[in-house]
Image 1 (cartoon, one colour):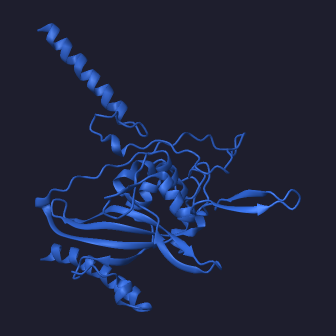
Image 2 (cartoon, one colour):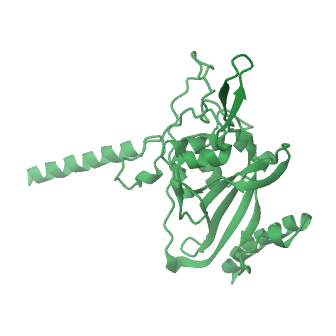
Image 3 (cartoon, helix red, strand yellow):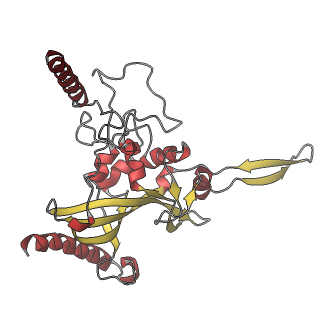
Length: 308
């Protein structure tokens, strides 16, 4: 009996110590202990080749390494869903609230714009890019860069001295400022188990501005599509610029999950059996009014489910 009691005491002490270690702030639980390895984060890295880290201590604060981790989504049972609609919305990076997408980066944010962070993850094989928003056909990193910058052009120029033809390869460099929009696909779900509307982003696509030969704007086209749960762990590694306070820096995963961006609705499955975009139905200011009307309907739907 005494040996059994000693064994129980040792076991309880071991569990207590292990539980306290996992509960410490900034110490993630190991993979396999109530966590999903897909949602693990970590620390970011420099993604812009022109960015150079300081060789001296740049500042007076004794900084610690920031290990940001993703908060896993709570599962939603189909039996608990009372309402569900799909919404497509657009983020314009030229709006003031969305300037974080255009921030050139620093040692916390990863030394690059968000599109550069995204492209770096695709090049390293950490995230898969797709050609469509249903994620049916994957793209390679070369496919993405070819679509973004185009193929190299070779021109032959005659040498004025020797008369020989010399090949000159012209390579178009990628300009991250050409990424002016991001399009999100998300689900709005009312979960009766928790009694509120839950918004889950399914995927998103960066849009680049295609220009004419004279440099004038032609159209915006999707570069690729990303399955959002695949990119969450990478988003958690990099911190977003805070215009108010340089000490408090939240991650890109917080930025999306807390919906700190400004956007407008492009399309929804609400009373839209033909999946028409608002841009095809409305013009001018009526497009924005229609977008705000859809937002109000979603808000009222949650209210109605509460009341009735």
